[in-house]
Image (cartoon, rainbow, N blue to C red; front, top):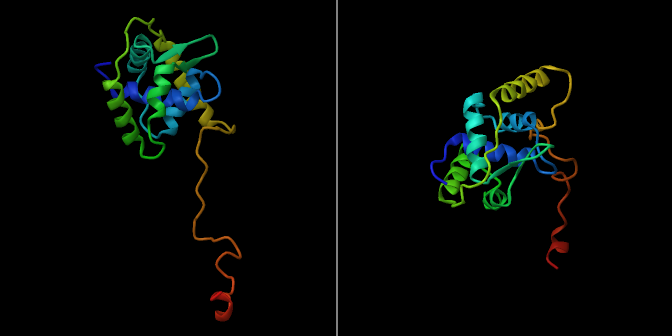
Length: 162
């Protein structure tokens, strides 16, 4: 599957995150891209990435949204869970360039108007009072330890030697 762009890898990772339990809508894919803390590409590049990945059989479109195909799930299952977003994009892009598919699948057509509406809906949902479930939990200070874990008295010496 050559050539592969960063947008293709980003779209595949975001679709993986957004479609864990059910097919993902465009707004959910955009929210997953935002969760990865990378800049969201413009509508034209995203529409091209949808068509490119659909043509190579990596993303399928249904009535309820977008999901990964079996080939894409195999590629994403091999990816490590940890690492920065840039490392993940690099690994997925590398694996996609080495992956061979038959490019006779139907292209997934997503209009730029639908993508701009999804981007606008994602921006307005972040400004509202609603809770976005794709936002990571805030980390605690880490200085606090659980009570009782570090403040126990050590055992007397004669009981430890047994």
